[in-house]
Length: 267
Image (tube, rainbow, N blue to C red; front, side):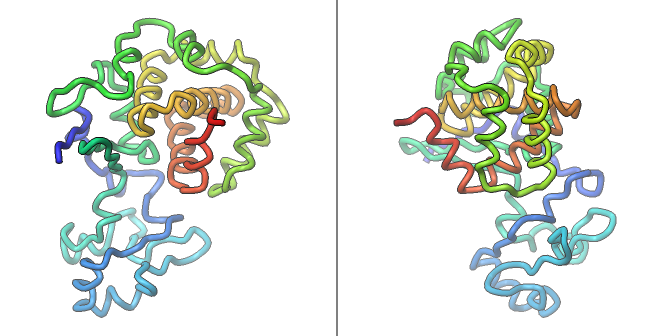
């Protein structure tokens, strides 16, 4: 199978204890069968596993191997090779289409956010190949990006309507829910939203490319995601990277929410 990845993919590096949003809390951590067989030789690890999942602790659902300094006790004791697949692979994703594997990095990781959103070079794949999903049409844009976004999908929802729509999703983080309710209480106009988008043309172009690449060219998914992110940024005053990270964690890491988004605009 041929495999392609963004040209920034190999630059990714976990920032470990410097990360302000650990990926080792708030998730169900399933252990793959091969790693589970290895863990059976380590009683100290197996004591924290039940039904092939690591037993998380406390209201934050922290991994028991997550130290207070943000580092992983398993890696410190046994090295990175001891990690189960889901821990070793995060925040990577893989899509398969027509015998091709497309690999990428997810926005829910702040280190990945830095790589993806700040990139000024045109998006390209390694090994070099034609860009899929119409990404080349976005990649070549210079200047304002809001007219391009507007041309890809009809703006048929107000910020209030969009926030109410996203509140019907599975809610994973109460902070995200509050941001949506704040947007309902104080809506953002389409003009203010688009002005915000055009004040960060590079970042929103990269966001559009990211969503198109990850979600197999689903324009409605990409457009509604960018509009939602921009409207929450305008209302909350929180930075673009943090809202993008929260959005990805909330929407892209829930099978229920992803299915809803993938069906936007379909009959």
